[in-house]
Length: 97
Image (cartoon, rainbow, N blue to C red; front, side):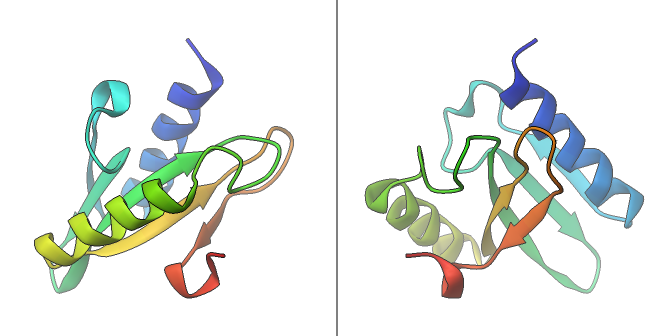
C-alpha cells in the first residue's frame, strides 16, 4: 500500500476518533481524498498530502477545484498535511498560497 493511501486512512481514523463519519474517494478521482460528516457541523472535503512540502502536488488549479466543489456542496475545504515522520496538520484555505 502506498504512503498516500495509508495517510488517507490515517486521517480518517483521526477524524472518526473525534466523532466524524468519513469516506475515502478511492483512487482520488474526485475533488477530495476524504469526505467527513458530523451532525451539527459543516461537512468537510479534505485533500491529503504526505509530500515533502504541503503544496508540492496541490497546485493552484487543484486548490481552485477543491474550493469550488466544497462551495457547491456547502462544505469546508481543508488540506490535511502529514509528512513522513511528522505530525498531522489541517490547513485551511485562508493559509493556502
